[in-house]
Image 1 (spheres, one colour):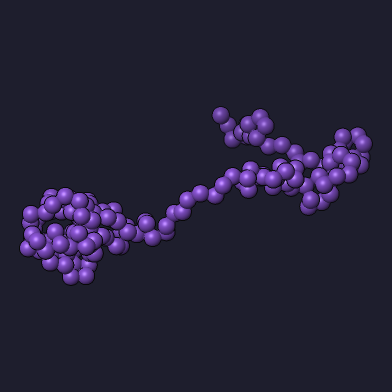
Image 2 (image 1 turned 90 degrees about the vertical axis):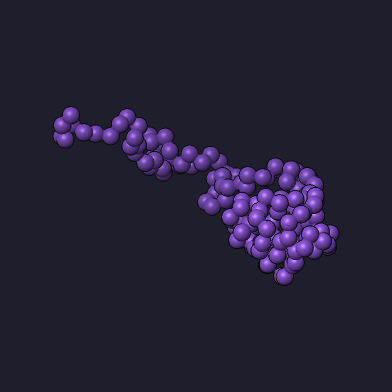
Length: 145
């Protein structure tokens, strides 16, 4: 291989179309756009992907179902029996993240009553349902939000 023999691969570089340069070029007169219609006009040749020729588009015919909360990404729930895996003491969002019970991007955590707890926990910065509060207080714990 020599520097003076280098050239682009076949089909890598193509010459641009020179439209409107006479009959012999194959792109004279109408310049490859055909006769009349929206595609022959400048700036009018685009049709939206969902356009169905005037028929009611599929996107409008289908029912709109469901709702996704933007807050759901930032909030999480922890079941009461999952707290048993933690050491008794103070529980905060950071300790729940460290234990892997909630995702790292979570900003709000709520304890939900499912199962029982035997250790005494002190919840700080973590909310709890009414049933979870009574279960934690019955085990000797407390909640401060």
